Length: 412
Image (cartoon, rainbow, N blue to C red; front, side, top):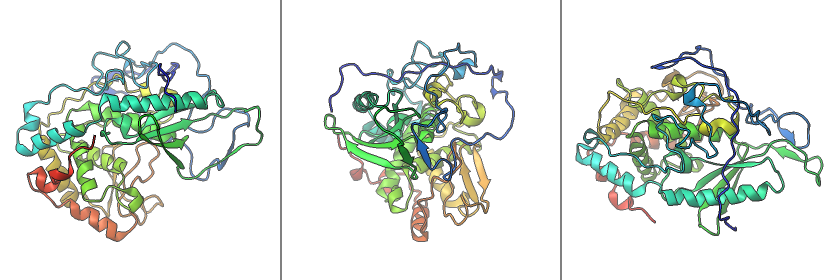
């Protein structure tokens, strides 16, 4: 694959949003139930590219109206890159643009006041994705988009998943979402898209060696990428805690949805839920505090810049990284009721497990924040569930006893 010298970036066009009043504690909005994004599995089984009418999947339009931005400043600064540029950002925005990289200022002493906390921080610094890793993925994304646009001019390829949400490591593969709107192609007729759950095309970039997973029109994955990216940077302790928990789960072989255990996405939601529901929360509930920034009906092209200017969260909880890790294990070992509760990051609480199809007979229930499906549905065997639950009982205060350090050396 030929890599262009100049990386073509995503092109966002601002559209007019309704004005929203807000208070220092967040948006003043109604408490109406938010609608679900996307369609059910039975909707649109076949989509004809040549059919007339607007696109029906993912809330995208081929030519957004070029109107001035009038909505609340926090949620309406749209740039030409997948996050807000420094020039367009509000000074208090916590989410860095891709141009800025993923740098963070030093951690406060209270966060690393013990041996376990320092071990967590050291592991995080050794493994966190570097800017050059992201640049390799962006080069391939841009080249792929350029080639696809020779056939489908309105198509866009979005980088998503851990590479962009702030929780990636140096060895993370890259998730791509190809978004193609309905439109005519001159040399074919009656094309049809047969919808599977989420079909994946796996490939390797010959130039960089990066492994890619490409999906088609799974726009909810783009939405949750930028929700998680905001959580990653809204509080300094979030990224180290999640990275070490992903390493812990991988070491104990409970982090592989293809083998009936937990996906990385589910693990991240479990950690965020724990941090939200402490007596003094470490992180806020972004979808409740900033509903316009994470509106599930927002045009998909505007999603990357929606949360650009959300400020950092100032928590009264000053627990160390080590205490938060041990608290996470204890919460799921002794407090959380697996048979009665549904984890909801969207509402920052547990929901009662009902008898509806999504939760019935499921061992672990974790709500997807945008479409409210169960992200832990892969755990469908009791023996796998019991193995997962058993791992949460390890409460020693040395990372080497929780996650043997000889298995944590990064492979660069």
